[in-house]
Image 1 (spheres, rainbow, N blue to C red):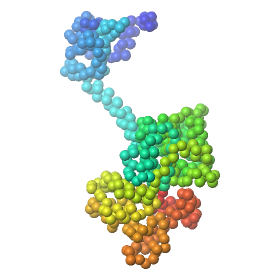
Image 2 (image 1 turned 45 degrees about the vertical axis):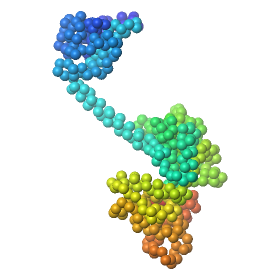
Image 3 (image 1 turned 180 degrees about the horizontal axis):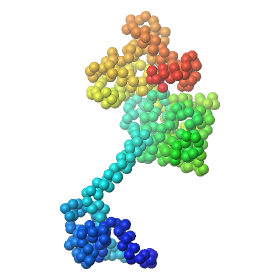
Image 4 (image 1 turned 90 degrees about the horizontal axis):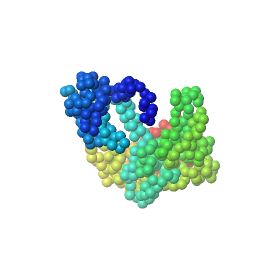
Length: 469
């Protein structure tokens, strides 16, 4: 190394030091200046001849170089008052052969203006960094933990305890339950409690991806691999989720052809971008969810058996809201807290009579439907207490034990209870017919539309109107 330095002409070394650090000073163990480059001399308005051989504190106002040369302790980014201003300096001890022989000092910023100029250059970069950090936290991070899963019923507590127990495992998890039961919340909580919580949490709704886009969404693509491909290419969901968790929602709605492509990713633990030349290894934990009966679909040839076994390592059944009616009150209280923030209200509570009405309903839409009902009540509420009259008419009529998912013939017979307006009765009948058709079609909306003899678009609109998922 010494020989290499000797190859550099001495006049070059001076210029190298000037370029590497604008202002540089070197002192010996006693704080005597051995070297001061031209930039520092110019800044201090002294010549090298005047500085060399003098105590550093006599040449540099408020200097601490002599202290660092004695203590051997570095001082980095230190504020240094000088010439009526403040500069930012670094001071490092010099050790040669394990012996403290002196110190070297450099100036980062000569005055506050230089700090500000540098800060202005950094500001856009910091703003961009914060933007992507916030985006990561919002989109790629889990938003819920087990404290957000409210319920004391036996079935719900069993599901929650099992989910907590397996959260730190690397095994696949299959969440089963009706739409609106909180399967995604469970997935968030499992990731949040796992050792992968600081890595991405990606969500993929298998029912919403068109078949022709599936490969590009899952695998990503290289630049120029097809017409319209982004410059620089694009990472797929699995590559983005590397070291983290991917949540495959509505896995039962995935067509067979796409199931085989997904199975390969799970088996090989690698993906290959469209147009790519080599596979990319991935380390991703799988959490899948569905409202369908996958075992029955396997028997009917609608779901690959090998994919089912790959996903069904740890199965967690999440009970519907009608199976845990005792939790309706506590869950409603949490949802009302959420609505308080949305509507800028405080102290919203359910009356006992309103709670009783809610407990008598069958909740085909589960917690999602309950949240919609409470939001509707808050919209028509003047005070703070939600009474039965603030609930939708179909819920008030259920004091006679009529289910929102099933209308028996007694619903239309003359009774002593409150008469329900015809329009509300028709709406309720329509909603029940849609729910029954969807059950018959096992959630396939195209098939349900055929059974109801209406258009698919019309069915989607009505599902949105009635909050049916």
